[in-house]
Image 1: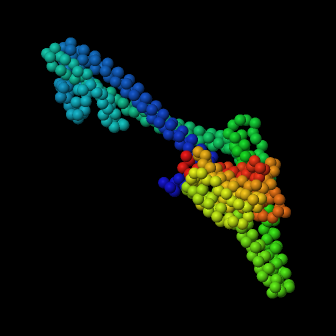
Image 2: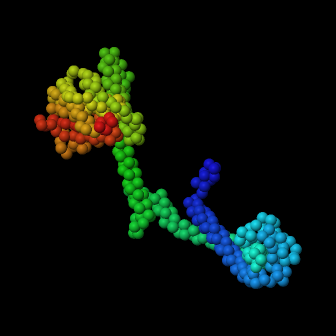
Image 3: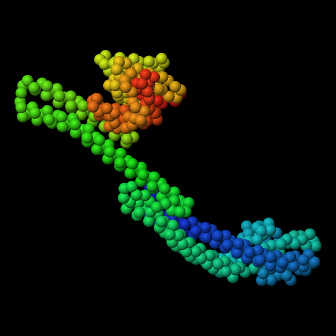
Length: 440
């Protein structure tokens, strides 16, 4: 069965449609042929029964009138008792006892082969002395049987012929119906970047297919453009730490100076750490883009925030955590840690003296708000800060512009939202809305 299914699924669509239509047409026509042959047989038997019954009724009338059974005997008419024994002086009936009982019960029967097929029928007659006799009549059905057999063969041949014609029509119709799809497939394969398929005028399935193709092409072009931009930005950002490490190494090799060795090694280590962080962020973003996310589970956001604040250390602005009630989000501990570290790192780079971290449950959501007292984010850039490799003030140093992009990718991947705004004092305000664990 599996092999047959595999073979069937490997056939062209046009062939499969033609075979299905042909088989359905053949089965339907064969059933109609059988029905027609059955109707023809019923009509033939009905006509024969009517003729035999008229003959039997005439004989019954004569018997009731007192005529002797021997005088009524003929090639197709016999007089017997209820047990089937002849009373007309003729030979025994060529019937079995069971067949005689069927005749006595009023049923008509067919006896013999195709070459000597006969129809038998019996009518009861009550004689003047009170005895009951059976008037048995029979008729030849050989001619009718031959007609029915020939009609059945003709029905089958016509059914097969019509099924072949229907299958051929289905092949031609399917070919004509799929020709626009073939043209659309060829056109789609030859489309250059940025071009779209022509949309048919008729509001039918082909128009819907063309529109879906165009939407798919638009997504493809957008993905390619984003990939090219991302690759270019990544190459640009990777160039700086690699160039710095190479320059430091070349200087150390060209001018070996024990007094500068320690300084050179520290500079190389710093650039290597920066490079490692950049590569780790790129890897996380690539996995997020590919949808490679582990299964979410409840994570205590308040406890994670306390750990992130402690991990940030005491140097720099003061970190203040506001968490009035426990709150759990649907994510993974690694994702929550990355989001918190990037938000706190971004706020500490721009804050003057204070960073406030708030965890606030809000029904089906948990709000994570990080505020600082720095210069804030210009309103025109509050959407752009979540784009990759975006740095509003590159001269001030800091990361590669991937931190907030990483936050957006991780949070949105779990069905949450991120937004940027301003505090009452003009500082930056970054808010994350995470789905609460359990969907309260």
